[in-house]
Length: 336
Image (cartoon, rainbow, N blue to C red):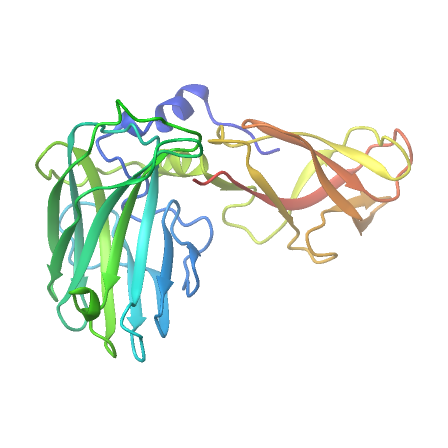
């Protein structure tokens, strides 16, 4: 069964304000979706998304960093992009949505990170945007900063004034959007069109105050729990489908309910559930054991879904009131 950790640990882990870093997974140590390479828009390391426009090729992958001096675990991301043939408006953005636009309202924050270029020195830009959510006030871009990146590991930082949200309307799913951009010469920066870039980035941190302090180390268990508020999967490190024990009695000859499955931690919102099965069979369908024979379900339905747990209804051929064992996996997504 997919069981929750202790309530005390979970509650402590899920508060962004528990530590000083407003970003989750700033050291890129949690990769529930895989280590890459990522070449199309979507999530990378947990909580980190990327998008691009008019970039000939791109690759983002998890790497081990050498030469770090701040005691972190050493994970980073490597961003390689080729702007050959770009039309003058090439961009590649890494971004993270920090839950609740009211965070750091009316205060100064300091953005810091470690970075190097594996090729030529280059320029990147960071920006913050207040998104007031559905039904809220219009989005508000805050003053950004530009950094010239050297070919050696260095720490960079900038102070940003966060506008007050006191007079604003905060809607549903509001957030503070942190965006990290690689742009081309047509926008006033390098790399220019036709240039291939190769960056490594680590230790992303946003903290309240007007000075950068040492990167905050978060233990791996707490880091994972924070990430799982937004995305979690039933099998973290295995390609083998999980068995979820006895199903409650079959409702009828064509439907059977799986016993309630508790999430690892409470999700931010009711999650989107995706089913998969690594043992073969029909794509997107779990299997159930019928007299020693594993059989693919004919349908999968989330009959009850909350931020804490779900119940699943499987379609197939059953004997009313008999119990079965099922096998499969799922992902849960409640990203902003």
